[in-house]
Image (cartoon, rainbow, N blue to C red):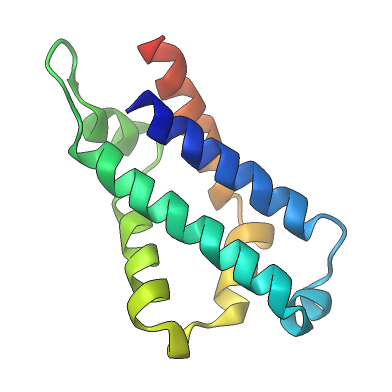
Length: 120
């Protein structure tokens, strides 16, 4: 489980690197960056799905702890399903807002970093 958490944190950092210095207009016309960001979002989604299923008998489920740190935790896995199965209907504005405008990635990174520290 710790490796999956590290994978999510690495993907978040990769996304931040990919879009550093970009405007929304730049992102909208840069298919390579769009694809890279979408790939990292799929990794995040899949890893979070696996983390959600993990159990820690001593102190409750990881999911319970993550829900308290990151209230939208349950939505993360659904994002990957949409990217994989509804790829033709992916809204680039929504992706841009998720990775650059909102604090979603920062909040998720912080919550998972806290969980990783608890596990170590």
